[in-house]
Image (cartoon, rainbow, N blue to C red; front, side):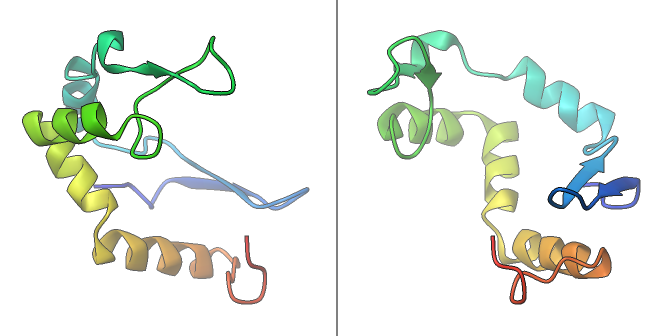
Length: 104
């Protein structure tokens, strides 16, 4: 799903990878069209002017939204997959970023 092929790297002051385009246009369009309403978001405990829809601060709405929205459910499943982690680590190593030598 993630396009690791068109990357621009910067290493100073820290490694930064820019993937453009990161996703296929059709998938990106589907994700945008299915983006959740702000009514599902909650205010951040520390900053009441910030909204969040996350596993940590708003888990009930977050998990319900993911479960009920097919394109986001598929994308979420991929982000949590071993393939995503493995591909990302391979990508980082190919671009001279070794997490074991330089942990985040």
